[in-house]
Image (tube, rainbow, N blue to C red; front, top):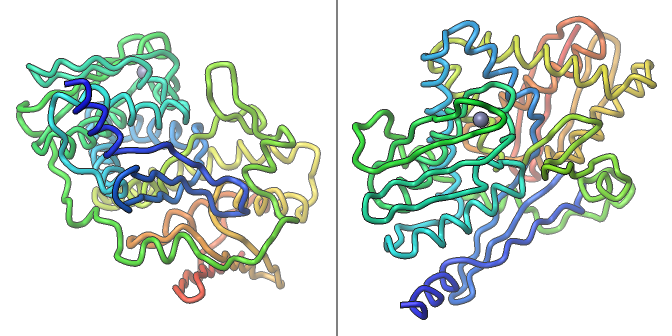
Length: 369
Ligand SMILES: [Zn+2]
């Protein structure tokens, strides 16, 4: 039994390599020992405060139950798309505990301490995740995003629909999610829609990017201690926690808010939290040009592409090379950048143009006052 397990595990997965030294492009690679399959995921870092603010605003405006439902759906779509990106397939249930440990380890490294302890009851197909001080729900007291994420991941691993329930009753001291197959279905993600694009790899992992050592990168931020790892294992940028996720996450957030016709909630929360974050980061740099520089460094260090900003009169243009490509486009990125710019100029700007092209990969965003 033990040998089969080892064989399967070795065959299924391999050490993760994260590439963080390239400006604007962060990814991780999982390769398999046997065969030639490897999977690469384009990663972006998000501010915990922004995500938490979006969720809190949703709770305030939609009520706790509706908001939890929404974040459960976002999480389940995310879990499924995470597995599809990793080319994951159904696994025999006797290796499930090891496979879950492996996947959880990926998440723990990003501050998702709800994946600290995993208990798998193979016979009953019940999987319990628990931990303390989990990123996001320690601020919102609502782990529905993680419940959805666990349900999505397990649905693909078990080859049948899995649902999960949030059991955080004392965040941040006790965070808990329980997942189980054969519960009445709450939400079934559309696997076809969540499949990565055919040209996902080609667009997101460009081969001949010229060397840009003079620009900021996640690795450089770590070396210069602008990004640190806290005692509880979270990445911190000037005191703000940031967490990594495949870039699809932003499209899923946008999609679900648009589906219920409440993009205003997202706007409100992003503008408010971006303003707070940029104010803190630019405390000693009141000038507009310095603040713009902080924004471009953030884009580079957090994996959102390689930006160039041009301001002419009432118009601000951003050309972002090698942005994280998704089939659902760049609406979240455009909104996020708008929120930061509005914080710089202390007035809301208007997005007047959003254009993207694949060859060479480029996103053009134009805002006006
Ligand atoms: Zn919690």
